[in-house]
Image 1 (cartoon, rainbow, N blue to C red):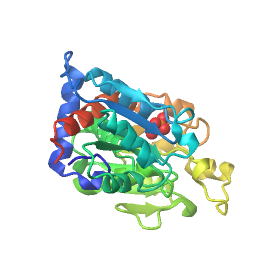
Image 2 (image 1 turned 30 degrees about the vertical axis):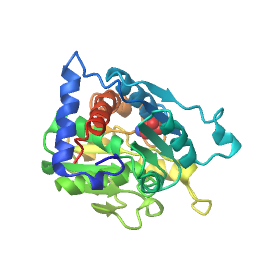
Image 3 (image 1 turned 180 degrees about the horizontal axis):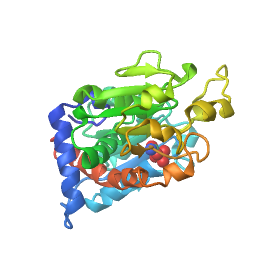
Image 4 (image 1 turned 60 degrees about the vertical axis):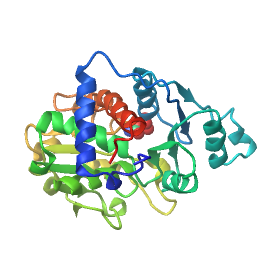
Length: 300
Ligand code: CP
């Protein structure tokens, strides 16, 4: 496969190979050199974790990495993203890490630019998918708990607007994990890819081995969706009290950035069951595995 766009396009074998390679990169001190490739990041939405970890991943594999500053690029003069990619490809850039607010844009670009010898990486498209986040989450879960197929995962919060939740549903479906989607009615997905939906926090968290708490994404709420934050906190916040519904050794995860005191309390986010910073660390090695698989054309 030329591109890394969605979990549903990957085989179980491809996912297992990425996990294996990421674990190898975690242990190994010496990394392969792919300096004949060059990468660029095109981030039309804000990011800390994803953009920096792709850059670090590229650096560790000796891949030069260009951070295109969209505020000073020709985007401001009205250049279409397609033309920006063609222009950069003409300079020899072959890996493009793209984040955009439009659902499905990376796939559209892959279709429209199929004649170019480039690899597109979806670093988050609108409310649609965030496949590298799901892969680093899978790595973090596998390291702590083993096989996903034996686990109950609970995704808590704004499932409807979450690209992270969509990609995690695809992973859980592939490995047939038990999945609970816990959300108030306004944040329930209209057509979930996988999992059981509940409005009941206690029921959803019961027996959970892994809790993935989602950010309250104020920027993605539609104008007609009223959000009473106090009401949300009362019913759905992950606190030391609500955490007791899950298994005593349940892992707490969050894709970040976290809203402390809204969807999660600080003592939970920073507590002994939290793997939030391990997720961030694993992001670098997982993204090394993704870049390598694209450069070596082993993603199938
Ligand atoms: N998880 C995630 O995508 O974080 P950033 O927005 O900081 O990249």
